[in-house]
View 1 (spheres, helix red, strand yellow):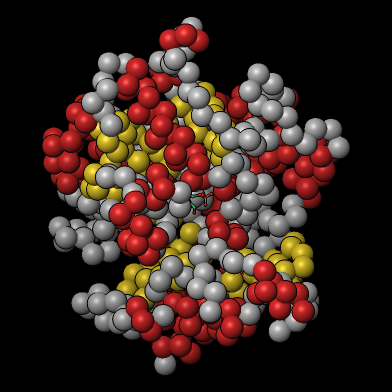
View 2 (tube, helix red, strand yellow):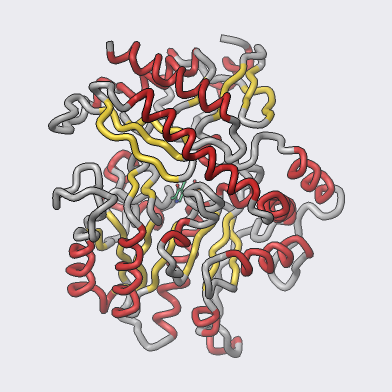
Length: 447
Ligand code: PLP
Protein backbone atom coordinates (compact mmCIF):
# COMPACT_ATOMS: atom_id res chain seq x y z
CA UNK A 1 0.00 0.00 0.00
CA UNK A 2 1.46 3.39 -0.87
CA UNK A 3 1.81 6.24 1.65
CA UNK A 4 -1.18 8.17 0.41
CA UNK A 5 -3.41 5.11 0.71
CA UNK A 6 -2.10 4.53 4.23
CA UNK A 7 -2.90 8.11 5.20
CA UNK A 8 -6.30 7.81 3.58
CA UNK A 9 -7.13 4.86 5.80
CA UNK A 10 -5.84 6.71 8.81
CA UNK A 11 -8.24 9.65 8.31
CA UNK A 12 -11.03 8.96 5.89
CA UNK A 13 -14.37 7.22 6.32
CA UNK A 14 -15.48 6.45 2.77
CA UNK A 15 -19.10 6.55 1.58
CA UNK A 16 -21.17 3.41 1.22
CA UNK A 17 -18.30 1.19 2.34
CA UNK A 18 -17.50 -1.39 4.98
CA UNK A 19 -14.12 0.07 5.85
CA UNK A 20 -12.79 -3.36 6.80
CA UNK A 21 -13.01 -4.33 3.12
CA UNK A 22 -10.28 -1.75 2.47
CA UNK A 23 -7.77 -3.96 4.31
CA UNK A 24 -7.91 -6.33 1.38
CA UNK A 25 -8.82 -3.86 -1.36
CA UNK A 26 -6.82 -0.76 -0.56
CA UNK A 27 -8.12 2.66 -1.62
CA UNK A 28 -7.04 3.47 -5.15
CA UNK A 29 -5.45 6.89 -5.21
CA UNK A 30 -6.50 8.65 -8.38
CA UNK A 31 -4.11 11.22 -9.72
CA UNK A 32 -5.88 12.55 -12.78
CA UNK A 33 -8.61 11.91 -15.30
CA UNK A 34 -9.05 12.32 -19.02
CA UNK A 35 -12.17 11.41 -21.00
CA UNK A 36 -13.46 8.02 -19.84
CA UNK A 37 -10.15 7.24 -18.14
CA UNK A 38 -8.89 7.70 -14.59
CA UNK A 39 -5.20 7.25 -13.77
CA UNK A 40 -3.87 6.27 -10.37
CA UNK A 41 -0.65 7.56 -8.83
CA UNK A 42 1.26 4.59 -10.28
CA UNK A 43 0.07 5.52 -13.76
CA UNK A 44 -2.38 2.63 -14.03
CA UNK A 45 -5.40 3.39 -16.22
CA UNK A 46 -9.03 2.61 -15.31
CA UNK A 47 -12.03 2.92 -17.61
CA UNK A 48 -14.71 4.73 -15.63
CA UNK A 49 -17.59 2.76 -17.02
CA UNK A 50 -19.91 3.83 -14.19
CA UNK A 51 -19.25 7.56 -14.75
CA UNK A 52 -18.03 7.95 -11.14
CA UNK A 53 -21.44 7.23 -9.59
CA UNK A 54 -23.32 8.11 -12.77
CA UNK A 55 -22.41 11.79 -12.76
CA UNK A 56 -19.58 12.20 -15.23
CA UNK A 57 -21.38 12.92 -18.46
CA UNK A 58 -18.89 14.21 -21.01
CA UNK A 59 -15.58 12.82 -19.80
CA UNK A 60 -13.19 13.72 -17.00
CA UNK A 61 -11.43 17.06 -17.38
CA UNK A 62 -13.54 17.93 -20.37
CA UNK A 63 -11.65 20.84 -21.97
CA UNK A 64 -14.70 23.11 -22.45
CA UNK A 65 -16.19 22.58 -18.98
CA UNK A 66 -12.76 22.97 -17.34
CA UNK A 67 -12.13 26.20 -19.21
CA UNK A 68 -15.54 27.65 -18.27
CA UNK A 69 -15.18 26.87 -14.56
CA UNK A 70 -11.68 28.38 -14.53
CA UNK A 71 -13.00 31.58 -16.10
CA UNK A 72 -15.84 31.72 -13.60
CA UNK A 73 -13.46 31.13 -10.66
CA UNK A 74 -11.61 34.30 -11.59
CA UNK A 75 -14.83 36.29 -11.79
CA UNK A 76 -17.19 35.20 -9.01
CA UNK A 77 -16.88 32.04 -6.93
CA UNK A 78 -19.98 32.42 -4.78
CA UNK A 79 -22.60 34.89 -3.70
CA UNK A 80 -25.55 34.69 -1.33
CA UNK A 81 -28.50 33.66 -3.51
CA UNK A 82 -31.26 35.34 -1.47
CA UNK A 83 -31.91 38.75 -3.02
CA UNK A 84 -28.75 38.40 -5.12
CA UNK A 85 -28.34 36.62 -8.39
CA UNK A 86 -25.85 36.25 -11.22
CA UNK A 87 -25.52 35.77 -14.91
CA UNK A 88 -24.70 32.02 -14.84
CA UNK A 89 -27.81 30.99 -12.86
CA UNK A 90 -30.13 33.15 -14.96
CA UNK A 91 -28.68 31.83 -18.21
CA UNK A 92 -28.96 28.23 -16.98
CA UNK A 93 -32.60 28.49 -15.94
CA UNK A 94 -33.58 30.20 -19.17
CA UNK A 95 -31.95 27.38 -21.12
CA UNK A 96 -33.46 24.64 -18.95
CA UNK A 97 -36.95 26.10 -19.33
CA UNK A 98 -36.59 25.57 -23.09
CA UNK A 99 -35.56 21.91 -22.95
CA UNK A 100 -37.40 20.47 -19.94
CA UNK A 101 -40.78 18.75 -20.35
CA UNK A 102 -43.57 21.25 -20.91
CA UNK A 103 -44.68 23.38 -17.99
CA UNK A 104 -41.49 23.22 -15.88
CA UNK A 105 -40.44 26.84 -15.69
CA UNK A 106 -39.43 27.76 -12.12
CA UNK A 107 -36.18 26.60 -10.58
CA UNK A 108 -34.95 26.08 -7.03
CA UNK A 109 -31.30 25.27 -6.32
CA UNK A 110 -29.80 22.83 -3.81
CA UNK A 111 -26.38 21.24 -3.62
CA UNK A 112 -26.98 17.49 -3.93
CA UNK A 113 -29.63 15.10 -5.17
CA UNK A 114 -31.00 14.09 -1.77
CA UNK A 115 -31.50 17.74 -0.83
CA UNK A 116 -33.40 18.40 -4.07
CA UNK A 117 -35.72 15.51 -3.21
CA UNK A 118 -36.29 16.89 0.29
CA UNK A 119 -36.97 20.38 -1.05
CA UNK A 120 -39.41 18.99 -3.62
CA UNK A 121 -41.27 17.08 -0.90
CA UNK A 122 -41.49 20.18 1.29
CA UNK A 123 -42.73 22.33 -1.57
CA UNK A 124 -45.41 19.80 -2.43
CA UNK A 125 -46.61 19.56 1.16
CA UNK A 126 -46.67 23.35 1.53
CA UNK A 127 -48.52 23.80 -1.77
CA UNK A 128 -51.38 21.63 -0.56
CA UNK A 129 -51.37 23.29 2.84
CA UNK A 130 -51.75 26.68 1.13
CA UNK A 131 -54.37 25.62 -1.40
CA UNK A 132 -56.98 24.23 0.95
CA UNK A 133 -55.79 20.64 1.33
CA UNK A 134 -54.02 20.49 4.69
CA UNK A 135 -54.91 16.78 4.96
CA UNK A 136 -52.37 15.98 2.23
CA UNK A 137 -49.46 15.13 4.46
CA UNK A 138 -48.34 11.76 3.06
CA UNK A 139 -45.99 10.72 0.30
CA UNK A 140 -46.11 7.74 -2.01
CA UNK A 141 -43.15 6.00 -3.59
CA UNK A 142 -42.41 2.75 -5.38
CA UNK A 143 -40.96 -0.36 -3.84
CA UNK A 144 -37.21 -0.65 -4.42
CA UNK A 145 -37.00 3.09 -5.09
CA UNK A 146 -33.89 5.09 -4.31
CA UNK A 147 -34.05 8.84 -3.79
CA UNK A 148 -31.01 9.55 -1.64
CA UNK A 149 -29.69 9.22 1.87
CA UNK A 150 -30.98 12.06 4.02
CA UNK A 151 -33.84 11.12 6.33
CA UNK A 152 -36.67 12.37 4.08
CA UNK A 153 -35.11 10.99 0.92
CA UNK A 154 -34.38 7.69 2.64
CA UNK A 155 -38.00 7.51 3.81
CA UNK A 156 -39.28 7.53 0.23
CA UNK A 157 -36.62 4.99 -0.72
CA UNK A 158 -37.07 1.26 -0.37
CA UNK A 159 -33.73 -0.46 -0.98
CA UNK A 160 -33.18 -2.55 2.14
CA UNK A 161 -29.42 -2.15 2.01
CA UNK A 162 -29.72 1.56 2.73
CA UNK A 163 -33.11 1.85 4.40
CA UNK A 164 -33.89 -1.14 6.59
CA UNK A 165 -31.77 -0.29 9.60
CA UNK A 166 -33.07 3.26 9.81
CA UNK A 167 -36.78 2.45 9.58
CA UNK A 168 -37.45 3.40 13.22
CA UNK A 169 -36.42 6.98 12.47
CA UNK A 170 -37.97 7.35 9.01
CA UNK A 171 -41.27 8.90 7.92
CA UNK A 172 -44.25 6.71 7.27
CA UNK A 173 -44.50 6.54 3.46
CA UNK A 174 -47.07 4.69 1.33
CA UNK A 175 -45.13 2.19 -0.77
CA UNK A 176 -46.65 1.06 -4.04
CA UNK A 177 -45.45 -2.25 -5.39
CA UNK A 178 -43.61 -1.08 -8.51
CA UNK A 179 -42.97 -2.83 -11.83
CA UNK A 180 -40.69 -5.85 -11.75
CA UNK A 181 -40.31 -6.69 -15.42
CA UNK A 182 -37.72 -9.46 -15.07
CA UNK A 183 -39.82 -11.35 -12.54
CA UNK A 184 -43.18 -10.04 -13.73
CA UNK A 185 -45.92 -11.48 -11.50
CA UNK A 186 -48.37 -11.13 -14.42
CA UNK A 187 -46.22 -13.32 -16.68
CA UNK A 188 -45.77 -10.49 -19.20
CA UNK A 189 -42.70 -8.84 -20.61
CA UNK A 190 -41.61 -5.25 -21.01
CA UNK A 191 -42.20 -5.10 -24.73
CA UNK A 192 -45.80 -6.29 -24.87
CA UNK A 193 -47.42 -5.60 -21.52
CA UNK A 194 -50.12 -3.09 -20.72
CA UNK A 195 -48.50 -2.26 -17.38
CA UNK A 196 -51.01 -4.42 -15.56
CA UNK A 197 -48.92 -3.80 -12.44
CA UNK A 198 -50.26 -0.23 -12.33
CA UNK A 199 -53.33 -1.74 -10.64
CA UNK A 200 -51.29 -1.63 -7.42
CA UNK A 201 -51.00 2.12 -7.82
CA UNK A 202 -54.72 2.40 -8.54
CA UNK A 203 -55.44 0.61 -5.28
CA UNK A 204 -53.03 2.79 -3.30
CA UNK A 205 -54.54 5.97 -4.74
CA UNK A 206 -58.07 4.78 -3.91
CA UNK A 207 -57.04 4.21 -0.32
CA UNK A 208 -54.64 7.10 0.22
CA UNK A 209 -54.96 9.57 -2.68
CA UNK A 210 -56.86 12.11 -0.61
CA UNK A 211 -54.20 12.29 2.10
CA UNK A 212 -51.23 12.23 -0.31
CA UNK A 213 -49.24 15.29 -1.34
CA UNK A 214 -46.95 13.69 -3.92
CA UNK A 215 -45.78 10.50 -5.54
CA UNK A 216 -42.05 10.24 -6.20
CA UNK A 217 -40.75 8.17 -9.06
CA UNK A 218 -37.48 7.34 -10.78
CA UNK A 219 -38.70 7.44 -14.39
CA UNK A 220 -38.14 4.24 -16.39
CA UNK A 221 -35.04 3.20 -14.49
CA UNK A 222 -34.77 2.25 -10.84
CA UNK A 223 -31.02 2.60 -10.70
CA UNK A 224 -29.96 1.54 -7.23
CA UNK A 225 -32.50 -1.31 -7.27
CA UNK A 226 -30.23 -2.93 -9.89
CA UNK A 227 -30.95 -0.86 -12.99
CA UNK A 228 -34.51 -2.17 -13.14
CA UNK A 229 -36.17 -0.86 -16.29
CA UNK A 230 -39.90 -0.47 -16.90
CA UNK A 231 -41.99 0.83 -19.83
CA UNK A 232 -43.03 4.51 -20.34
CA UNK A 233 -46.70 3.53 -20.26
CA UNK A 234 -46.38 3.04 -16.52
CA UNK A 235 -45.48 6.71 -16.12
CA UNK A 236 -48.49 7.76 -18.17
CA UNK A 237 -50.73 5.75 -15.89
CA UNK A 238 -49.18 7.36 -12.82
CA UNK A 239 -49.72 10.79 -14.40
CA UNK A 240 -53.43 10.02 -14.85
CA UNK A 241 -53.78 8.88 -11.25
CA UNK A 242 -51.98 11.94 -9.93
CA UNK A 243 -54.31 14.20 -11.94
CA UNK A 244 -57.37 12.38 -10.68
CA UNK A 245 -56.38 12.67 -7.02
CA UNK A 246 -54.63 16.08 -7.04
CA UNK A 247 -51.32 14.45 -6.15
CA UNK A 248 -48.04 15.91 -7.41
CA UNK A 249 -45.91 13.71 -9.58
CA UNK A 250 -42.28 14.26 -8.59
CA UNK A 251 -39.82 12.98 -11.18
CA UNK A 252 -36.48 12.03 -9.74
CA UNK A 253 -34.34 12.51 -12.87
CA UNK A 254 -31.18 12.79 -10.82
CA UNK A 255 -29.81 9.63 -12.42
CA UNK A 256 -31.86 9.49 -15.63
CA UNK A 257 -31.57 13.11 -16.80
CA UNK A 258 -29.12 14.40 -19.39
CA UNK A 259 -29.33 11.69 -21.98
CA UNK A 260 -28.78 8.63 -19.84
CA UNK A 261 -31.91 6.92 -21.18
CA UNK A 262 -31.34 7.98 -24.79
CA UNK A 263 -33.45 11.13 -24.53
CA UNK A 264 -32.46 14.27 -22.68
CA UNK A 265 -34.94 13.43 -19.89
CA UNK A 266 -36.56 10.06 -19.23
CA UNK A 267 -40.03 11.58 -18.95
CA UNK A 268 -39.83 12.47 -22.66
CA UNK A 269 -40.27 8.77 -23.47
CA UNK A 270 -43.72 8.91 -21.87
CA UNK A 271 -44.81 12.20 -23.45
CA UNK A 272 -46.14 13.55 -20.16
CA UNK A 273 -44.78 16.12 -17.71
CA UNK A 274 -44.26 15.79 -13.99
CA UNK A 275 -45.23 18.61 -11.61
CA UNK A 276 -41.76 18.74 -10.14
CA UNK A 277 -38.51 17.41 -11.57
CA UNK A 278 -35.27 16.91 -9.61
CA UNK A 279 -31.96 17.12 -11.46
CA UNK A 280 -28.37 16.61 -10.35
CA UNK A 281 -25.39 14.43 -11.38
CA UNK A 282 -25.17 15.12 -15.17
CA UNK A 283 -26.47 18.64 -14.57
CA UNK A 284 -22.90 19.86 -13.98
CA UNK A 285 -21.29 17.13 -16.06
CA UNK A 286 -20.11 15.57 -12.81
CA UNK A 287 -17.91 18.58 -11.98
CA UNK A 288 -19.65 20.22 -9.05
CA UNK A 289 -22.25 19.20 -6.50
CA UNK A 290 -25.44 20.95 -7.53
CA UNK A 291 -29.08 20.01 -7.84
CA UNK A 292 -32.22 21.74 -8.99
CA UNK A 293 -35.89 21.13 -8.71
CA UNK A 294 -37.94 22.54 -11.55
CA UNK A 295 -41.64 23.13 -11.15
CA UNK A 296 -44.71 24.73 -12.68
CA UNK A 297 -46.06 28.25 -12.60
CA UNK A 298 -49.13 26.84 -10.82
CA UNK A 299 -47.11 25.56 -7.87
CA UNK A 300 -44.98 28.71 -7.76
CA UNK A 301 -48.07 30.92 -7.70
CA UNK A 302 -49.38 29.21 -4.54
CA UNK A 303 -46.40 30.67 -2.66
CA UNK A 304 -46.54 34.17 -4.16
CA UNK A 305 -48.18 36.65 -1.80
CA UNK A 306 -47.49 39.43 0.69
CA UNK A 307 -44.75 38.51 3.14
CA UNK A 308 -47.15 38.63 6.11
CA UNK A 309 -49.23 35.75 4.75
CA UNK A 310 -46.31 33.41 5.56
CA UNK A 311 -46.62 31.63 2.23
CA UNK A 312 -42.99 31.90 1.13
CA UNK A 313 -40.88 28.78 0.69
CA UNK A 314 -38.43 29.41 3.53
CA UNK A 315 -35.96 26.78 2.44
CA UNK A 316 -32.31 27.50 1.80
CA UNK A 317 -28.89 25.97 1.37
CA UNK A 318 -25.72 28.03 1.74
CA UNK A 319 -24.48 27.03 -1.69
CA UNK A 320 -27.79 27.49 -3.53
CA UNK A 321 -27.10 28.61 -7.09
CA UNK A 322 -23.32 28.46 -6.73
CA UNK A 323 -21.83 30.30 -9.74
CA UNK A 324 -19.03 27.78 -10.31
CA UNK A 325 -21.53 24.92 -10.46
CA UNK A 326 -23.83 26.95 -12.71
CA UNK A 327 -20.93 27.70 -15.06
CA UNK A 328 -20.34 23.94 -15.39
CA UNK A 329 -24.04 23.36 -16.04
CA UNK A 330 -24.00 26.00 -18.76
CA UNK A 331 -20.87 24.47 -20.26
CA UNK A 332 -22.64 21.08 -20.37
CA UNK A 333 -25.53 22.64 -22.27
CA UNK A 334 -23.10 24.39 -24.65
CA UNK A 335 -21.86 20.93 -25.58
CA UNK A 336 -25.21 19.15 -25.65
CA UNK A 337 -27.56 21.74 -27.11
CA UNK A 338 -27.07 20.87 -30.77
CA UNK A 339 -28.04 17.25 -30.03
CA UNK A 340 -24.95 15.72 -31.67
CA UNK A 341 -23.63 14.06 -28.51
CA UNK A 342 -27.02 12.56 -27.75
CA UNK A 343 -27.43 11.31 -31.31
CA UNK A 344 -24.04 9.64 -31.23
CA UNK A 345 -24.79 8.13 -27.83
CA UNK A 346 -28.05 6.73 -29.23
CA UNK A 347 -26.17 5.11 -32.14
CA UNK A 348 -23.52 3.78 -29.79
CA UNK A 349 -26.21 2.45 -27.44
CA UNK A 350 -27.30 -0.01 -30.14
CA UNK A 351 -23.71 -1.05 -30.76
CA UNK A 352 -23.02 -1.49 -27.04
CA UNK A 353 -26.16 -3.50 -26.39
CA UNK A 354 -25.51 -5.84 -29.35
CA UNK A 355 -21.98 -6.34 -28.13
CA UNK A 356 -23.08 -7.20 -24.61
CA UNK A 357 -25.86 -9.49 -25.76
CA UNK A 358 -23.48 -11.38 -28.03
CA UNK A 359 -20.98 -11.85 -25.27
CA UNK A 360 -23.12 -12.51 -22.21
CA UNK A 361 -26.56 -13.80 -23.22
CA UNK A 362 -25.72 -17.48 -23.44
CA UNK A 363 -23.83 -17.65 -20.14
CA UNK A 364 -25.73 -19.98 -17.76
CA UNK A 365 -25.73 -17.44 -14.92
CA UNK A 366 -26.91 -14.45 -16.92
CA UNK A 367 -30.57 -14.09 -16.02
CA UNK A 368 -31.40 -10.89 -17.85
CA UNK A 369 -29.63 -8.25 -19.90
CA UNK A 370 -31.57 -5.00 -19.84
CA UNK A 371 -30.69 -1.72 -21.43
CA UNK A 372 -31.82 1.83 -21.91
CA UNK A 373 -29.65 4.40 -23.62
CA UNK A 374 -26.02 3.54 -23.00
CA UNK A 375 -26.93 1.84 -19.73
CA UNK A 376 -26.67 -1.94 -19.85
CA UNK A 377 -27.27 -4.16 -16.84
CA UNK A 378 -26.61 -7.86 -16.50
CA UNK A 379 -28.45 -9.61 -13.69
CA UNK A 380 -26.59 -12.69 -12.53
CA UNK A 381 -28.60 -15.56 -11.08
CA UNK A 382 -27.82 -18.95 -9.65
CA UNK A 383 -30.48 -20.59 -11.79
CA UNK A 384 -31.51 -19.11 -15.11
CA UNK A 385 -34.78 -21.06 -15.27
CA UNK A 386 -36.09 -20.30 -11.81
CA UNK A 387 -34.34 -16.88 -11.67
CA UNK A 388 -33.11 -17.82 -8.21
CA UNK A 389 -30.49 -15.31 -7.11
CA UNK A 390 -27.07 -16.21 -5.75
CA UNK A 391 -26.67 -16.28 -1.99
CA UNK A 392 -25.84 -12.64 -1.23
CA UNK A 393 -23.18 -13.78 1.26
CA UNK A 394 -21.08 -14.98 -1.67
CA UNK A 395 -20.79 -11.35 -2.84
CA UNK A 396 -20.51 -12.55 -6.42
CA UNK A 397 -20.78 -9.04 -7.89
CA UNK A 398 -18.11 -7.77 -5.53
CA UNK A 399 -15.69 -10.56 -6.57
CA UNK A 400 -16.19 -9.56 -10.21
CA UNK A 401 -15.66 -5.90 -9.30
CA UNK A 402 -12.29 -6.68 -7.66
CA UNK A 403 -11.10 -8.72 -10.63
CA UNK A 404 -12.15 -6.05 -13.12
CA UNK A 405 -10.28 -3.39 -11.15
CA UNK A 406 -7.10 -5.40 -11.55
CA UNK A 407 -7.73 -5.30 -15.28
CA UNK A 408 -8.38 -1.55 -15.35
CA UNK A 409 -12.19 -1.39 -15.47
CA UNK A 410 -14.38 0.20 -12.80
CA UNK A 411 -17.61 -1.81 -12.67
CA UNK A 412 -18.91 -1.54 -9.08
CA UNK A 413 -21.95 -3.84 -9.45
CA UNK A 414 -25.20 -3.35 -7.54
CA UNK A 415 -25.36 -6.64 -5.66
CA UNK A 416 -25.18 -9.23 -8.41
CA UNK A 417 -26.18 -6.85 -11.17
CA UNK A 418 -23.19 -5.84 -13.23
CA UNK A 419 -23.86 -2.69 -15.16
CA UNK A 420 -22.30 -0.21 -17.52
CA UNK A 421 -23.32 3.46 -17.34
CA UNK A 422 -20.44 5.21 -19.11
CA UNK A 423 -19.98 8.86 -20.00
CA UNK A 424 -21.97 9.64 -23.16
CA UNK A 425 -18.76 10.23 -25.10
CA UNK A 426 -17.39 6.68 -24.72
CA UNK A 427 -15.81 5.34 -27.91
CA UNK A 428 -16.53 1.92 -29.40
CA UNK A 429 -13.04 0.58 -28.73
CA UNK A 430 -13.58 1.27 -25.02
CA UNK A 431 -16.95 -0.49 -25.18
CA UNK A 432 -15.19 -3.49 -26.72
CA UNK A 433 -12.52 -3.40 -24.03
CA UNK A 434 -14.85 -3.16 -21.01
CA UNK A 435 -17.20 -5.81 -22.39
CA UNK A 436 -14.31 -8.26 -22.87
CA UNK A 437 -12.86 -7.58 -19.42
CA UNK A 438 -16.23 -7.84 -17.67
CA UNK A 439 -16.95 -11.13 -19.38
CA UNK A 440 -13.54 -12.64 -18.61
CA UNK A 441 -13.88 -11.60 -14.94
CA UNK A 442 -17.39 -12.99 -14.74
CA UNK A 443 -16.28 -16.31 -16.21
CA UNK A 444 -13.36 -16.52 -13.80
CA UNK A 445 -15.45 -15.82 -10.72
CA UNK A 446 -18.26 -18.17 -11.72
CA UNK A 447 -16.08 -21.02 -12.95
N1 PLP B 1 -32.05 9.97 -6.65
C1 PLP B 1 -31.48 9.08 -7.48
C2 PLP B 1 -32.31 8.42 -8.52
C3 PLP B 1 -30.13 8.79 -7.35
O1 PLP B 1 -29.59 7.87 -8.15
C4 PLP B 1 -29.37 9.46 -6.37
C5 PLP B 1 -27.93 9.14 -6.21
O2 PLP B 1 -27.42 8.18 -6.68
C6 PLP B 1 -30.01 10.39 -5.55
C7 PLP B 1 -31.35 10.62 -5.72
C8 PLP B 1 -29.25 11.10 -4.46
O3 PLP B 1 -28.37 12.03 -4.97
P1 PLP B 1 -27.12 12.48 -4.04
O4 PLP B 1 -26.22 11.29 -3.93
O5 PLP B 1 -26.49 13.61 -4.81
O6 PLP B 1 -27.67 12.93 -2.74
